[in-house]
Each structure stands twice: as C-alpha cells, then as structure tokens.
Image (cartoon, rainbow, N blue to C red; front, top):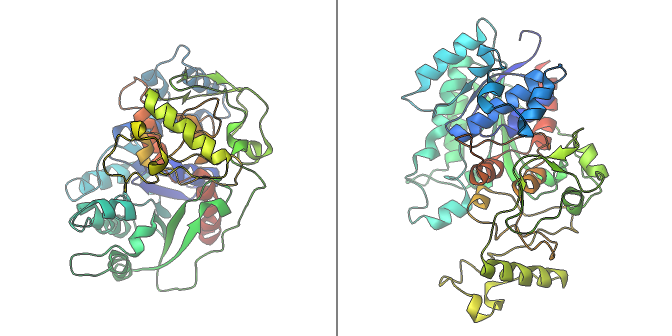
Length: 420
C-alpha cells in the first residue's frame, strides 16, 4: 500500500470513478456506499482486480459465466482487509465515527493522499428541481458536502476530486445563496483551495454527451493548480459500441455469458471495453408492452428520416398519458450514426423509452450491457443486485449514476502527476 498513492472513494456507487483511478495506479483503501447492490458490485470488482494476473483469475471468469461458483464463494477469495474495504453505510453524523474507525483500521499508518467522489446528484439536478414544488431546497442531500468536508478534516489528503451535475452551479438554498459558493467557502475554511471546470465526456473518449462539474481541491493556499486533461475524441460512431453484440428483441437475452456476434470495432479495443473475453454479460433486453413496441417502431422510422418523435405525433390510440407537455420528448432513439448519445441517467431503470435501440428489426430499448458500454464500462465489469438473484433494475440504476471509467482514468492520470 505504501508504494502506491492511496485514496478513499466516498459515495462510491458501482465504482466507475474508482475504476479509472485503479487503472492509473492508485490504491483504493476504502469505498463508502449506502446502496447494498452497488456494494456487492464493488466487492465483485475488487475480486477482479485482486485476481487479475493470477492463476485464480479463471474463478472470476467462471463466476460471471455462471459456472460453478457462487457470489459468496467468489467474495471469500478476498483477504479480509479487501472485503472490509467496501463499507456499506450511509455517510452522515450518525455513521461517520464508525466509518472513520473502519478506515483508520484499514490504513494503519499509511497516509491518505486523495479523496474522490461526489454526493448523490438528484438534489442538484435541473430535472429533479423542475419536478419538485420546493425546487428541492429542503432536500437534506443538498448538504452532503458538509459531510464530505468532515472526511477531508479527518484524513487530510493532499487533494480531493469532487464530481457532480451542472445543476450544482445554480442550485440555491432557501435564502437564495448558491450551494456551490457555500461549499467552496467551507472547503477553504478547513484549508483547501478549490478550482473547477465543466467537462464534456465526449471530449474524453466517451461516446455520450454528459457534462459534469469536476472540482479539485488542494490542501494549502496555492492557486492555479487545475490540470489540463488530455482530450481524446475518437473517430467513431455509437454503432461501433453496439454492432458486435448479439441482436435481440424485447424480452430476449442472457444475464450471464453471451458470445459476441462479430469482431470488435477499433473503438471497442482502444477504449478497453472489449478487453480479451470472448463473451459479454448482462446483455438482456427488458420486455415491453405491445403499445410501447409500436411507439418504438414509429420513433425509429422517424429517426431514419432525420426526425425526432414528439408525443403529439402519435396516433390517438397510442397516447395514454394526459400530461403531454411532460411526455413531449419522452421517446428518444439512440443515434447509432452519430458520435455520441444522450446522457445515460438512473431513470433508465424505470423504463427504456428515452433509450430506444436504433435497429428497427430489434425494436427494443437498450440492454444493461449496451448502457454500460455507452458509459465506457469494460465488458468484464459485472453489476450485482442486492440479492444473488439477477436484477436488471439495480444494474440500470448503478450504470446511470456512474462516472464513466474512461474520463475517470484521464482525470486520475493528471492527479497522479500532481501528487508525485
């Protein structure tokens, strides 16, 4: 642990941000996450990194193929300190002391160089505020940055990386003060200068339009430390993500191993999404009603003519929602011929109307694996549910909430340079 730069991941989710930092050579001392399903995913991925390059790695492969090893048996392959490094607790005044105690035990005398993570973004999101009559000003999640500051005070890392949605820049408290300003003032008061930029993921190798605030804090009073991240705009289209996967219709597919239907595109290799396996997992399409599938077909037909479907364009017999203003842009096709898709968000767990596959023959919404690929997760990344029973809903939610590993790695490489 002493040879590597050590970090803690707060509000870790399924580990997208952490995956990038591990690839860049950082050592995760602890992941803290309240969602049990996401913690199971973190543990499974911890097994992956622990076994990679060893003869026992085949046990991980057997597990994601559903061949003769249970999740409990897989996680038991981890040393106790690595199992204990995934802390399934909500961050808050009632739990912080317990979390501090656990992490202090894990790190021993090793210093923490970095803290990464961002509180749940729903409270700051523009969509969330538009749906809430109080514009989410009374949402306690707005103040999770106060908890974040307590971890900075306790562990005193040299740097921290705080990720969140654009809505954080405009969200205000009941007195009209911007949370973002209050947060930065708090960080400064405990000894950290902060600088930020808004990054667009499609400029960093991810075939998705996804703007996020990346705020970096540095202990001390130094300014002008924000790094320039290396951009990568691949010559690729969204079809390069989708074309090698087995064609499916609604309700078809396999939660475990599915063979590829063709060779990998250059983008899949360059992005490390296809990374040596001869199969992928969680390529299973959700079932849909006959009405939904008819709407999907109309949406794709319009898209092929260069048009977007608006709800009012549908025949009356297919209009089942009274609030047509809300549903105006509810059905959206993933643009296979374009260099990026719309943002993948956690709402994909509820339905796939905003993520319709561009192939009219398949006539369905995205599978979890397709969504994970758009988020730049590698095909050997396996998303878990709360129980051992496969959960498509939990998988979609984790994928939609994640930081794409590709941009996380690009950020991590520059942070590593600042720390060494």
